[in-house]
Image (cartoon, rainbow, N blue to C red; front, side, top):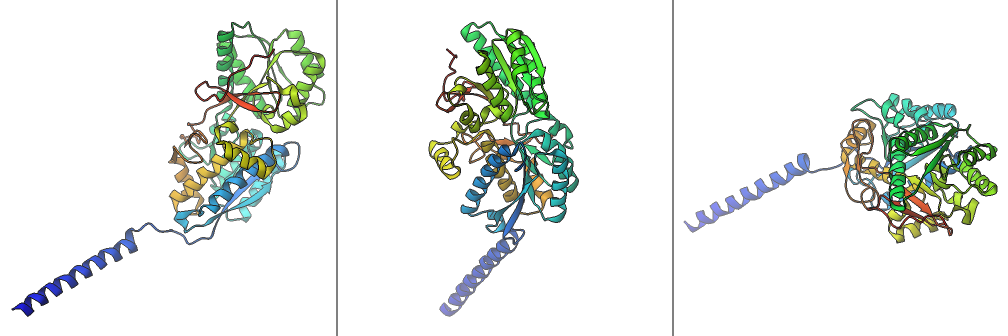
Length: 414
């Protein structure tokens, strides 16, 4: 009898073990999350103007992308793909929009690309956007023209704009100046001057509309042909208008020339730049203490990063500080990384679907490093905001608005 009881118990144990092993086997065969593809690398194309008049922007953005990719790879790569590394395929699209189109199309036709980081300049992004849509390749970008969103298929965007739109740039600039007017009891006459590219025109139009709606006295709105060779005529018009504030929207070389000419002609209007050239370390390097008190709207500022990360970046790339497009594109690479993780695939269509559903609240693409990521039906990151920054005479660029994000206080020029 005892032997039978032992036998029954043994059989019961053996059956239990078999059932448990069966459950474990079923789990690992069918339920355990594992890579849907066995891959070593994920090809991400980087389309940047690395030659021509806008090459300074392309090189700065490329550094940010490389920095993010190196971090991701050093931390184990894409875990859902078994640790696959991000491989950047860097392509110079020049500063010429017509050349950029053929270069991007040739690259996407020849290589197996899973996703892309598109040019941060709006006129280039608008030119190449139809190619991303044609080949169904998701691309993140730091460009800000609202036309990019209009050109995306609704509910099926292929280009994903990380930062605020040009309309938000104009609106934030006007709200900030309205706050200054109230706080300091200022009587403001404002001149708006801008170049002829898509970004410059769109931002200036948005600023004009918002300044007008808030009741500002707009004494001049003047467009010039980009690039400037002589800023004297435009600065003389600002002086003749009687403006005590000027809102210039221009790329780097034009921005430097405008400020130099204002100093040379003794025009003392307070400068509130419309982004772009007024945010670059090269702007300070060309003007030194003459940048003092210059304000600009921006997509991001480096003082959102921890100090040790800022110092690491400065040492690595030998720069004064990480400029505006660095934070936007750094976050963009991490958004792509997270989408690839969730897709568990190198298939660009699956990655695009993951981007459309993406919500990031923390980590390198979330606060306080960046603002977070969540794309709307047109591909705009609705978590993005614009900020206002101000230069000091010793080359620091400090966030001063919105006040809940400010790292320092606005300084009224003496």
